[in-house]
Length: 484
Image (cartoon, rainbow, N blue to C red; front, top):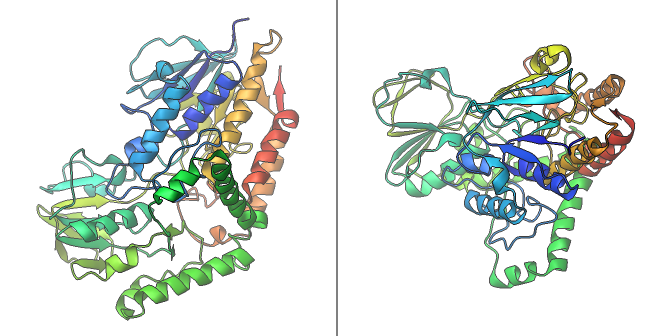
């Protein structure tokens, strides 16, 4: 039997992790399909002004690849450069097909292989296994009024579709949204633009970021392997301890109470001299029920005289600007749609057919679920990274665990006796019963958010620690998966 041949869909963090995990297992016959013209995934697409990561640089990176970070929270330029350098070091570039998005994958019951159809229309041959690495924040949500021929004569763009060369300087900018991407754009626009109008449907809870450039001394220390390892492990265990027992996501959890108090104190310290803004910036939902935003610059930006906070949605566009829900007109020459992503529809950009021709989205029926976000019954040799209910911190630790899970099982296909990797349906059912039981006790269950499918089921969040998840992946590949 020939060595396994693997299709990897996506060349971002998780796709790179998957390719390296396969390489470590001696599997080098793989193709990485990437819809964009460059590698980097999220960090290739999200190039808007102020774009940076919300996890510390030392933990938002691979455990096996150190980097001389220039700041504690890297911006998109530095992260993209890091990913490109890692891909080059591990010899991944010859395996990558850029600008060739996958449209479908289909399993053959007859020969236990997958065929992959991509936008190029090229016959890629058969694959022993497929690893989906497309994530779940990859399909921008565009409001209906901004689609098609809207008549606006300025520039309009989503944060994940930022036009090359567009600057904020001296512009009249309108930003729709107050989530993480919006806050980063607004913070930059407040310093560069002539006028900034923010359209807010609902505010979010904030915590200070503590963002800073590393000094030369800090960078010198970070180049020491032991210092780097200590910084990374300290950050990892900080997140791990915080999330034990979902204490960060339960209303009466000790971590939630502590961080909620810190967020309220930050709000009061920043805006107590502007009670009008403080009222508009105070959420009504429980702390952590939606993604908590971290920023040092947003609250000060709101107080700038040329920054205006409109507590209404936008209902339409004109030739020169926007009309809010009250019917008021606002001028703009640049409209930024920080309106998020179609997060609950996993793998929405391509079709997946498994045993007997069943289609994955039909099986899910609007409620994506899997064993540890990785495998679904009826879809042999098909793995997902950053799949349903695996959104948590620190993200890259999850990617590495998922890549190890898939690569270790695919490596068993090198044995002539093994052709199919399947997950036990009863294991998936037990796991999701436990998972949804825990999620029901969190603040996420109390509030509508992109964490939920249309049915109300939480399909995004992992409620407990990363170590818990990692241990479960190791146990599951021995007890919940069948290789035959």
